[in-house]
Structures are given as structure tokens and as C-alpha cells.
Image 1 (cartoon, rainbow, N blue to C red):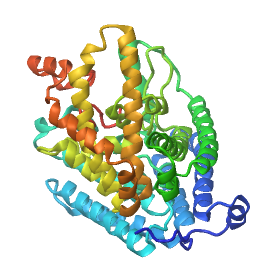
Image 2: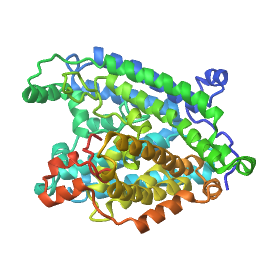
Image 3: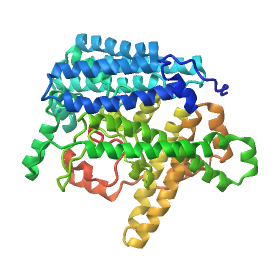
Image 4: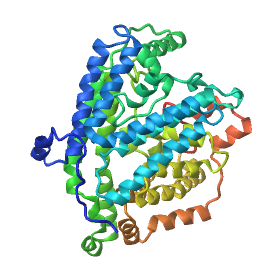
Amino acid sequence: MMAANTSPRPTGSTLLLPVSELLHMPLEQVNFVACQLFALGVAVWFRTYLSASHAHATVRHAFATIIGVYLAVFCFGWYSLHIFTLVLVCYFIMMNASQERVHRYSFITAMSYLTLCQINRVYIFNYGILTTDFSGPLMIVTQKITTLAFQLHDGMSHNAESLTKQQLQNCVKKRPTLLEYLSYHLNFMSVLAGPCSNFQDYIAFIEGNHIRSKLKEVSLKEKFHVSDPSPNKAVLHNICICVVSLILFLTISKAFPISHIVDDTFINEYSFLTRLGYLYIAAMANKPKYYFAWTLADAINNAAGYGFNGLDEKGNPQWDLIYNLNIWNIEMASSFKMYIDNWNIQTAAWLKRVCYDRAPKYRTGLTFLLSALWHGVYPGYYFTFITGIPVMLAARAVRNNFRQYFITSKVRKLGYDIITWIVTQLAISYTCAPFFFLAVEPSLKMYKSFYFYFHIAVVIVLIILPNKPSKDRQRYYSKKTPLSTTNHLEEKEPFKHMNNNGR
């Protein structure tokens, strides 16, 4: 049963308490936003005056680490010790464990420590703690620790032929120094909100090879001749998205609180379709806060000069190497898989690196369960992710059995896209609602108020429809298409198509 929502005692700096009181916002949220805005300004200075051409890599590593540690302490006070402790313990493991076991020990340690902290949040704070607490950075650090451990295992492996193309490309062949390790995990650009990136990409950025190597690849392949690209346009674009997202969240989320869904009066007085429409709007209203946080994090990395991903077909620079979401594809998603592919992209890439590519069987199910465990121990998370598994399978079954009949004409295809868009958006709001409720009681009450209609529909689909592969998948297996061409398959499992940059 959900306890009263009492505000937890802040552990970070109280310097901005007057601002918090003026804006009527929790101090933790004010500290978080202030630190990210400060990091954005520091990132511009870092790229301009402490670039690789002006400063040695050691200086850049040290500066990025010191500022990152300061921001963590400012936001979370002594709770930041959890982040630093996990980083140092796993560095000890990385330096002393054998190459055959370093990834296992690091994964077990990091996930166990994160889970223990998540259990502490649930039972000590009893659902009252804010989402801007120390567990967010701890989740990002866990991704980085395990990413580096697995890539180190791959780089030091004597069985390179068993690795995929992406694993070979991103493997780490020697153990990093302590400064490199701390900089990768605690740098000011990603310590608060991520995203996680490949260790080799981060080191190349610090050493000044990040953009040069990407431009060299483009010049060799496409004969483009360009100077070092500026991220200013990408940064301004991201800042505009942040402003719009913040305005939308502060207005729409207050007008359509999702807690209203489980209000007895609302359930009893309004029709099923009205409540279903409200659920969609309320769930949609919660998304801009994620758009704001992730897009701001992307702007910080780009402002520092990190995130360049080559040039597009017209020769325009792309700064989406470590971006975390594609808002247009999310809002226009006409399949459950399309939605997942464009939401929290770097976390999906991490799940692929450490679970999907490594699991011998039941890869999709294990990946969803790991995602739930990584998010925390709130029961609502497990309602969402466990429900998501059969929804994904049902959506794939419907697509593989019916889509070919609707792509023969533009009119049919348009109708199919409209229907699948409506169903997808309703499926997402229904599946993800417990993610916001957190507790068991409101989650079950919400599902009961909707008569478990989507659960029932999914079960019926899985029972009735045959599990047949799509035409693209059939052609793939019949021709034994090489691994490198799987990105062109139209119907794929979640996580399967993503390379280690989340693309």
C-alpha cells in the first residue's frame, strides 16, 4: 500500500533553497537542473579553452573528473559516496580479476550494489523519495562499469572469432589507468544524467581523436572534405527542445495527473473510453520530463565536443553518437518495437551489450527482466516490463501475419499505419502506467478498472495467430545473410538491430 508522499530530507547543498521556495519546486530538482545548466556552461568552456589542441589528455581527464565529483556532491551530499564507492570497488575488481571473470565479477558487484541501494530506497523512504536522488547516477555508473568490464573481457579474450563485429570494434585491449577510469565514470558531462557511451569513444574524445577519426572515415568513403564541425547548431536545437519539454511538463502534467486514473470517483463516473483517453493523455504528459533531462544531457556532451557521428549523405555533421531518444519516432511510433527502439536508446544499447548478445537463449525475456532490475525494485517496474514481453510478442505476431496485405496500396498502408499508431499508443500507456504508480495496489486497481482488457487481447492474439516469421526474416534465413546486413531487416527483435552506439 502506498504511503503518504512525504518529502525526504535533502542531503545535497541548500545553497539554492531560496530558489526552491520561490519556484515551489523540491530542492533536489532545483539542484539537479542548476548543476546541469552549470555543466552546460562548463562544457562550452571545456571545448573552447581546454580542447585537446590546448591541453594534455591528463589535464582534460582530471578537470572533467573534479567537476563531475563536485556536481555529484553538490546534488546528493554524502549519498554521493555510494557512487564513488561502487566505482572504486569495481576498479579494484577490474585490476585484479582475470580476463575470463572480470566481466562477471564486475556485473554481479555493480548490479548487487545498485539493487541493495534500490531496496533501501523502497523500504526506508517508502516511495516518498524523488526521482532526482542518487540512484539515477548510480544506475548510469552501473551501465558504465559493466560496459567497460565486458569490453575489456572482449579485448583480452583469446577467442576473438566468437565476438561480433560491434564487440570487436569496441573492445578494450588493456586495463585503463585510474585517472582514465575515474574520468570515464565521473566526468561532469554524464555523471548526473548520462548517457553511457563506449569507453573507446570517450578516450578518443579526451585525446582529441574523436572527430578526426570520424572525418577520416567519411573522407575515405564519401570524398567529403570538411574542417572540424561545430556542435553549436546541435546544442541550440537541443536547448530549444528542453525549453518546450519543460513548459509542456509543467503545464500538461499538472492538468492531467496520472494518479487521477485510480480515483474511485473518476472510475465510477466516467465511461471506459473516456478513462482510456485520459490514460493516454496522462501518460503522454509524463514524457516531457524525460525529454528534458535526456536532451539536456545530450546538449552538454555536444557542447563539450563529444557525440560527433560523422556526416550524413548531404555532408552535414551529425551529433547523435550518444543521443538517448528520437522524439518524432516516439510520438509517431506505429509498433511497440519502434517505440522501444527510440526511447532511452543508450540503455537499450547497454542491454544489448551485456545481456542480449551474451544470453544463450530466452534473450528477449532476460533482457526485459534485466531492464526491470536495473530500474529498481518498485513493483510497478515489474508490472510494466513483464507485461511488455507478451505485448511485444503479440505485436510481432500481428505484424507478421497481416502487414503484407496492407502494403499493396498507399490507401491501405495509410489506414494500417493509423490503426497501428492508435493501438501502439494505447498499448504503451496501458503497459507503462504502473511505471508511474510504482506500488502494487494502484497498479492492480488501474488494470482492474480497465478489466485487464489489453492483457486479455494479447493472450488471445498469441493463442490464435501462428508464430510465423516475416517475409524479410524468411529471406534472411533462406539466404543465410551475413551478420553485417541484419540492420536492413524490416522486422527484428528489440535490441537485436542496435549497434553499441545505440543506432
